[in-house]
Image (cartoon, rainbow, N blue to C red; front, top):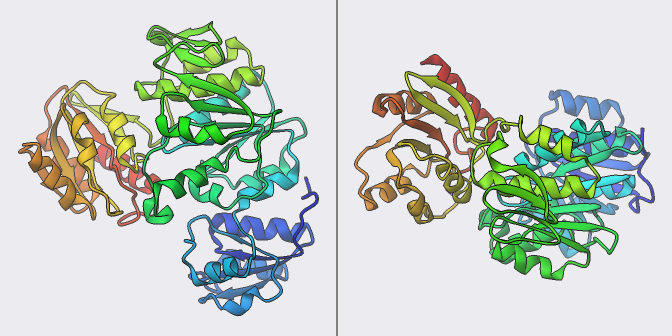
Length: 448
């Protein structure tokens, strides 16, 4: 088991339990670091609370007393806790570092660390890279925003193995020394502004993925995205661009027929199993990482000809009486839904709605030409209904839950139609996670 090396803090406040907080508290305890845990919602009877108490840790529940900062060197907080939290704000004013558990990766001194971020496509790209390593019989682990606590995985990773980590802006904002050997920036879109408040702050958080990289590292980035192009100008590392629009001698690109790395043909597009034009960008990014890591073309092609996608991201669910059902519950913003809509030419019934983050949905308009019906739910249903009426769509249904949504969509559909769950919103108004929402959709489809 790996130990933290040169960790500069003696006393740590872990703010927020859940999966990552519990893992971090246990990890710090194993490294002999004094750890105090604070959580607003957990209760004494929770199994993870009792586990930490049995390890001798001090745990404060139900409030965030400012006195907790006395004698503390650093806060490691759950990424979802906002910086407006009074305890976090006070710590910042006192000059205490406020980090996320991703920062701990720096102190494990890993042999190879690949970090992937972007507004959309992170999970697909992370999984593609991971599968390419495996196909080439290379030691590899995957972690981060994809569902596994990164520091927990890093603690047990084998020597010589690569760690491929999906990273959100929430996680990256809480880093200081974190440094991947290869970083990937897929795209940038106005997202999570309820958390970051401005696009500049969101971009600043994303740029943390490469801010500590140097001349021995690599940054794979989307040369077609103007915001990404602007952001990477501050990078001090080796730039490896990818593009679907132009030939690149120093990166990966598509000519519309095949995909290339530095003018070396890798695979014909027609042989790729993963659907959706937007996935070409994800694939180009994955190829760039694989080639930088010396993964064979045979392994790359084997993955690309067999990999059909991840759960909740344009996941094919079923064909019922000629209706094709797709679960894209991971589409938690407008860009993701627009990409999903572009993947289909058939008449489409769109199931959408969810948490209201204050934005409007007019940017979806250019991508709705094949949408014949809206089935809406959640806090944003009225806004999406207004959009549908604005573009002259007459078939609009508002429902209370996912089972109703699937039933109504089936009633509205005809043979040959696509029934697409692509909410364009986070799930937290009705569901704990986008996975829970997607699973409800899948279950409801099977009930048909």
